[in-house]
Length: 547
Image 1 (spheres, one colour):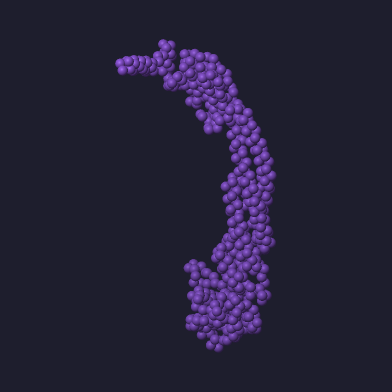
Image 2 (cartoon, one colour):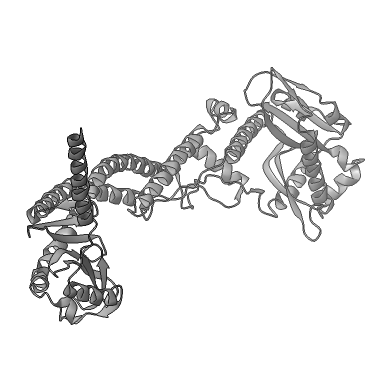
């Protein structure tokens, strides 16, 4: 047992002896040589400071910053006068170069990096952002590939661009011949009606044309032209916007056309229906015209409308007969279920016919004709001689009944339909009649005062087909032709644009890649000029001492 205890004791002493030696050796501090300490002291003194760059160079390099990077590396960055870093050099403590980085025009955008490992094995590559390329031939091949793709893309797009130019020129040529078809200025009632009749190609002396002119859809052709130009305007607006968005430039002469509003169309429809209704009344009066004088569309002065000058008043029909002086106002209206309520627009009609009577009284009372002077003395009252008549014409040309006419009758206004015209004209009031010489004298006096002022005008947009105007039926037809040609070519251009954009987007992407690799290749090519610079720094190990 003593032997065993002695053996264990000797073993423990031996174990702890060698273990203490091992721990002592492990914890021993590695001391730098005196030379290494001196070098590190020098480096730490200049580390992080901006120092002049003393080597001649072709890149206008001006200053550098040196840093001590533990453990065992020295980093040196070299800048030009603008503060752009051109080179980053990483040295080992023995002043050999461990890493050499050359930057492109923008910091970190392009770079060539060269590394040496412990065995002095060299590794070199080019880099842009995250992409790394080890061989210059790879960059060159990519550049050549995208260059060929760009050429192919241009070859595909060039014919489409030529077609775009050709059709755009055709559109511009057609647009050059576009003219306004709407006159935006006041126009007389007569000219407006003449314009509508010509546009619709109507002959109001024909029964079928009058039926169509009265109908609610009586301006079909004008509405169709207007609708066509609405489509044209929408097409042109969208097309010009698209051309502008694509930076292709707007077409010079391509502008929207003036069009009629719904109010304008309604106004034209009423004018045409009114003209047709007046023609029907004219026919009816001519059928019973024996011994009568008919004056159509008479304009007489009206004394009570303006303070310092005479106004004017237009009368649809003035009939001079032995039974009296008849002022006939014609109204084209649409009946509902065979009936028309005459009170619907009573106020306007009553005011209108009252002006008729006042205009006639004003002219006759100022007359110096002895026949008229004697006539006015002969009759109890001139009001009894002048008779206001309102004739309602149904726009549907069907039989209908007038309702609520009592108020007209109380005001001395006679109301009737087309069939009632003859009976109204032959019936004398209070047995006051005109002699033939009185009828002639009244006719002469009224016609001499006709058109003291221009006929009533309307401010709405209306179509004009006057021979002495710039616009006529032929020119409107030409405009329709050119408008259709423009729409047709715009459609074709839009198809080309769709193809063009598809190819252009693909080509643009290729072109961007081409420009990128062209720039990258040129920069990488320039990096090769730095080989001499690198060799200079690799051989000359006392760089830091000279700094």
